[in-house]
Length: 246
Length: 260
Image 1 (tube, each protein chain N blue to C red):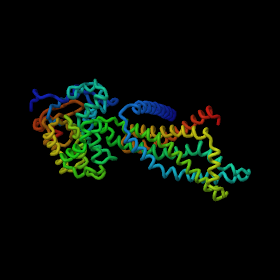
Image 2 (cartoon, helix red, strand yellow):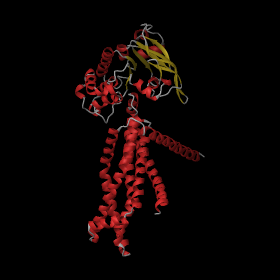
Image 3 (cartoon, chains in turn red, green):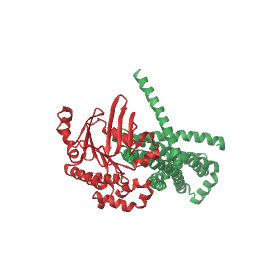
Image 4 (tube, rainbow over the protein chains, first blue to last red):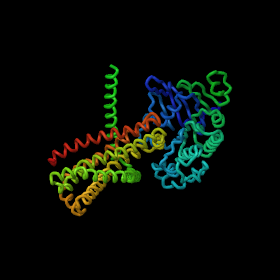
């Protein structure tokens, strides 16, 4: 396993707990995401992966535990400061979540509205970002005119436009055919290399995990069940771990 | 026993919802008066609401004026009071029937539209995406829609009332050979400041209620696509109920100030 002792952690989660009534979803989950790293989190449906990333960006409040993003404990942040911090985080939603009343251009311009300097250069930035996902020709189309793969690319461009330090991918290849899924994975790698972002990737897709991960965490029953590189986990003899790699 | 338990649960959830709606309204006022203001989106919403409702309001107003005049005519003729038709119709329409009927039509059109739009944005994570990008979705989506509905409803009501009076004048012209000029002269003479002001004032509250309920139902929509339908449907029911409550209060208050 690659050692990250000398590399700075951009995201730190400690003992995260979250319950919905009697349903204890997260039971003390912890992780460190290092600069420039691609960390994949795998777990069964309902294991708390989505809840964990929603806690990370402040869409849900954890019952206890600590989340530190680039040295800021998010529990101590005011809403205004949290919004500023959110600009450092790109989020690719599972269903793309494009604003369907806006064109592709307007979708990309939307996150820039709160950033005065970048908003002044919005045309340039939109073109540059769309070029990096290979979809400049779709600039004036509406989301309903795009295919599933194109929507995912536009959503990725929207997540990238503020040049974030961290990108969170929520099941980036779910619902796509194998060829498009492969293209999206390649695109994620290219983006990571170009922008040197740290990526937190939630996925069920073994191929995606194999190609993109530097490190993996298996989330079972709301805790980190196992951690290591893809090969380390794939060669494990533990039954629960093996079940993921069948 | 089971029935009484269900009734008590329904009453409890009703009051809980009223409480949540009140908090939602408080948040609206907090956000509405703090910068930044979303003027561009507000104008877009005003245009959409007006544009989408104007035909429906026009047709409803016209038919309202026609039917009201046709139904009243025989009774007034019987008492030899048909000359009072423009006064009676204008006061009834401007004071009460016009604002209430048009607001109910708009509750169906605007409130359900907002409920469905925001509801589908909620279930497809578009609202979450706005929040994650550092934008305040409440300000962008809710404040603009509620303000737009508050501003547009009075305009739609004035437009609907005018069309209703034109419909009424048309019947009077065809049946009683009263010219449009004479008809509208009588309308202007009959209408007083105390008829127009309370009606206009309450139409702002109608608009606010329509926008607020639609936004509340859509913004907190749950249970996937089924929830979108529920949000849209219950937005109309709650908004309509609220309109009658506001109307009652408005009549009560205007009675104190203007002695109807």
